[in-house]
Length: 557
Image 1 (cartoon, rainbow, N blue to C red):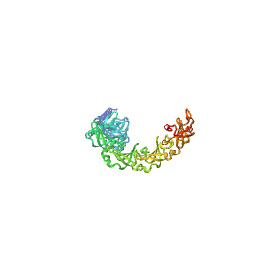
Image 2 (image 1 turned 90 degrees about the vertical axis):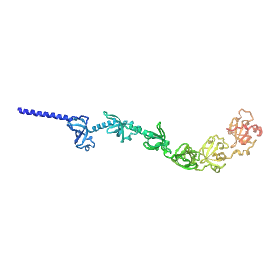
Image 3 (image 1 turned 180 degrees about the vertical axis):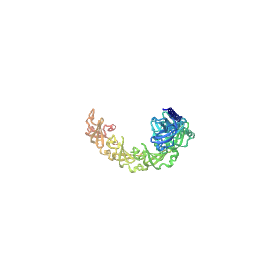
Image 4 (image 1 turned 30 degrees about the vertical axis):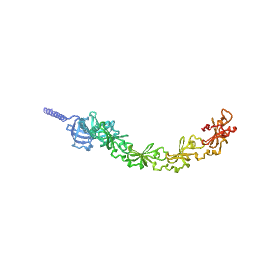
C-alpha cells in the first residue's frame, strides 16, 4: 500500500471512530433525566399485532400490550398522547426496546392520590365488588379492604346486600410496599351521628313529632334512630290495637313519624309513641258501647278462661267461658269459638279506667231458667243425660243450660248405695222425677227411686206388732241378723232375740239365705225400723211386753 493510500485509510478510520463516540454521546444525552420507575408522557407511533409502539423521547421506542388500553385496538390511535411508567430502559430480550406500562402508571398516580387523601384525612367513594374473608372488597381505583367491623355502627348480618353499592369511606391504613389499603365506613357514620346528635338533643322535647328510621326490632318494641340518638318505641305504643310482634307493623329501615313521650336528657333515654297520632278509642267508650248493646266482634285470642273479641282497633272485650253458653259442660272456649271467628255478643260491663269490657254470648239466647217451673213442674217425669258423677250423686242434663241432681239417697228405696255408679253411668239416658226446684240458685232436685212405689208405704197396713212372719236372712253381724220380710222391707233380729239358751255366740246358728220364723216385736215406721224376735215364738212374748229397746237398733252397714 502506498503512503497516500495508508494516510487516507487512517483518516477514514478516525472519522468512523469519531462518529461512534458522537453516537454514544447522543444516546447518553437522550437518556438524561429518565430512570426506571418514572412516569413520562409518550406518543403512539404505531400499532401492530404485538402491541402499541410508543415514543417517549428516548433513543428507543417502547412497546405496550394492547390489553392495557381500554377497548383494546379500537381504544388507541396513532398520535395519541399517553402517560406511561418506565419499567425497564431495555427489555430482557436485548432488542433495545424500552419496557413501558400504562396500568402501572395509573396505579402509581392512584396511589399518590390516595396517599394525599389519607394524609389529609379526607374521604373517597368506591363500589363494593365482593365478599372476602373478614369483610368486603372495594374498588377505589385500587382494590381495598373494608373489614366487617368497619361497615356500619353495628356489624351487618348479611354482607350480600352491600355488593354493587357505592359508599363513601375514610382510609384508615395504607402500606404501598405491601399494596394494602384498609377502609372504614363506620367512622364517617359515627361522625355524622355525633354531629346530628347534638342538634337532636338540643331540639328534642316531650310531645314533639319527629321522623326516625327503624334501626332494630325486638320482641318488646323497636329502636328508632332519630339522628345520632336512639329512642324506644314500645310494642304497647305502636298501635291502639293488638300487636303480637312489632314486625307485624314495622320493618328495619322504615321511616316513621313518632311522638316523643318521655325524654331523659341526662341519661339520653327517649320513649316514643306511634299510636298517639290518633285519638284513644277508649275516650268515649261508654257512649259507643252502652251496657246491653249488642255488638259484632272478631275473636283475636283464646285463653282457658274465655275469648277476647276485637270490637274496633284498640278496643277488645272478654267473653268469659261462663258467659258463652247456658250449658255448664263446656270445658274450654275453643269448643265454641275459634280464632278469627266473627261473633255477636252483648255488653255486660265496662271498666274505662282499666280498659276492660265484659261481654256475653249466651245473653243472645233465652235464659232456660226463666220459666223452669212451667216446663218442669214438681212431680213430672223427665228424661235427661247423665253428664257427671260425684260421691254424693249424679248430675243429669235436662236441656242445654239446665242440670238436675239425683242425690244418692234418691236412687233406691231398698238398696244401700255407696256410689252413684252402682245405679247409673256417664252418658246414660235416664228418666227421673222432679222433686224440687230452686230457680234463684238454678238447682233442680231429681229422684230415680220415686219412679217406683215405696214398699214401706203399705207396711202399716200389712204388718202389726205381735205378728209372726217367715223371713230370709240377708246379712249377719256381731250384733244380730238383718232379715228380709218382703222385697224392700227388712227387719233386725237382735242377738238378744235369737234364743233363750245362754250361748257365747248366739249368731252361730244363723247364716245368709237361711229362712226362719220370727215375731214382730217393735215397729218405728217413720224410721223404717222393724224389730224381730225368734225366741218370742217360744216364750210367748207378743211384742208389747218384749224386753227390747229400739235405740239398740243399729243401721245396717
